[in-house]
Length: 124
Image 1 (cartoon, rainbow, N blue to C red):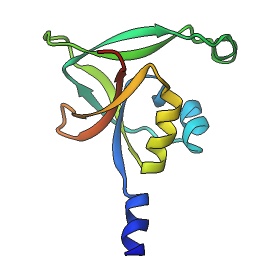
Image 2 (image 1 turned 90 degrees about the horizontal axis):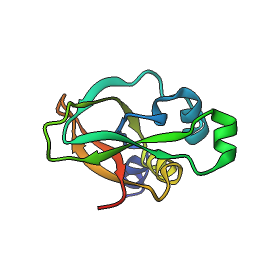
Image 3 (image 1 turned 90 degrees about the vertical axis):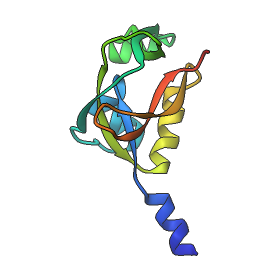
């Protein structure tokens, strides 16, 4: 039983990243390591939009004035490009904290057929 619990804590899941979580510096800050190049993929059913960076310190440190965000759309919008990264459950918890209240994590199937988590707009 203890071995099963340990295995579930280290089992990998996939994250579809389309924005700042593709940046090795952000990955190192969030996960404590560079996740590598990831696997290119695409995601349909969403459109890419942006939300403002509200923390002036983040803008000063990174130069970012907005964050990308996915909004579900029923339209035939072009697929959103991104990358798949294997994460542990602990990594997902760290990503949840990084993404904050503007985002929610949902399960999706990518163009390549991968089951993955992705962060989308929390509203609606």
